[in-house]
Length: 162
Image (cartoon, rainbow, N blue to C red; front, side, top):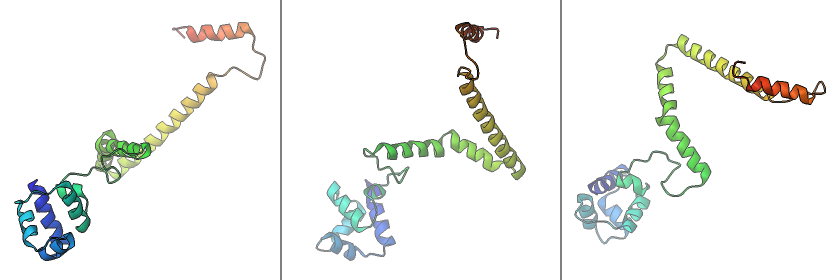
């Protein structure tokens, strides 16, 4: 809780407010209550923390000293699209994506170009393989396919040595 009181004072000074200014904005009779709060002598209820955050133009989590991982995620229930964005940001900035970006940034310019070219070629190959797989899964349409031909195709597909 001591962090809260330090952050109140820090934010008050950032906004160039005196203790008297802050006391007036919060409805306290004089600056003595603000001085006690900033020293950590007085505990603040949640409603007062919200009031301080409002007057100090910040969030309660900032005053409490809580780390905010993603500005679009408050920790409360969120719509699916916000949750998905948060999840993707965590993955992107803390998982394998970040490691890959860190490695890429350490490469020389010629090696970065090689990685880029390789990645484009790899994606193109993947797309061609996916197209071929889709095409291979379809029956021929240029001729009339008999039951015997279908059985032959199935036998080939089931053959482990093929």
